[in-house]
Image 1 (cartoon, rainbow, N blue to C red):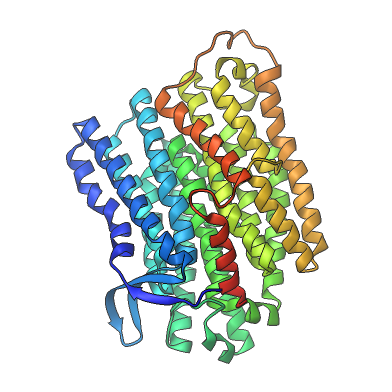
Image 2: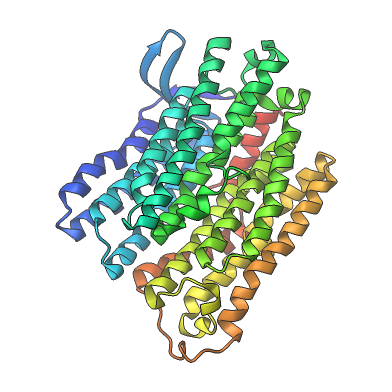
Length: 497
């Protein structure tokens, strides 16, 4: 493992704020759609370019850091683009470009109201997500974590209906309550040990705390992060939030909110408590139980959901806990598998939501039982849906196989045969709730879908692109973004090997 060298750089800060700078430009251009879309795409491309520029240094053991403001002698708001932060930042910023392109087609066709607010909120969401990725300590993390909650709320209630307002209220109740738990956990941590900086392998001062304090802090942290990570029973806000426009659902599930939750769990395991403390008190076992329960129960709940986005929501709940499971196993392969699943699930799930949005825009169909024969009318869309479904089941060569393979190896390394059994059962359940949709689309007939009619190219091209990308990364997981070597590096940092 390379030794870590920290150097001063403004790049992490620029990567966070570039889309914030775009927000007033988007709002000013509210009456000029093309100019508004230009600012959206320009900001997304610049943001990704800045994050990507950090990749070579991170692979060489160099961490770009910048201090925003010193608050107290030992506590500041600071950003550090370490391997884990760049890993999450790369997939988030890249998929924001794709989602922005897709959103342009979606809002144009449906003539959505409040489009300027929509794109401005999107920009604030991705800035918050990058702030979470690059947070150098717990204080910086919670500020951006809560900012993400606020930024997402206008997107959840975008339709302005009674149902949407109710869903937004539920979203806020869950996420703001979680934020209170996180603030309490961070405040106690700061008071007890005097600092809140992330440290690979865990904050060393934690070993001086009493067993009771460690366990209470663990409950507070997991309670705070578990809401956005959608760990059962803290999950019910997520299916309710599917009332939002489909690109927002894609943002919630693949790029920002729930991924920030599981990213926070990885930070918690690897950079706050650390494997030694978690193992000493059996706290990683608690995470394994919670993750295993969530994986199986949410998969079973998916079978009863006839709404397409609703079924995708329960699938997301299940797959988020794959990532939690990988972190909790605390074995080299388990950590690699969990990290890879952040990327693989993001690409696969964004493809599925893009497909659901294309179906809705084209035919205003939302129920699975209404999709008989739609594969003949929308072959590109449903072909991409099929590939993404195969990936989430874990069939090669689609990328989902790779992360599940390493999770399985991680279970064996940890001697957790029950985890391997859970993963195998989950794969079968995934097939059980995804493949009937594919069967309906291509092998059942309907008078409604006789002629070919794909959605706008603004929507079809992104979903085909992400479907193809899932195969490319499945065949060569270090392609383009070096996700695999980054995952290996992060695992080594956490485990100290």
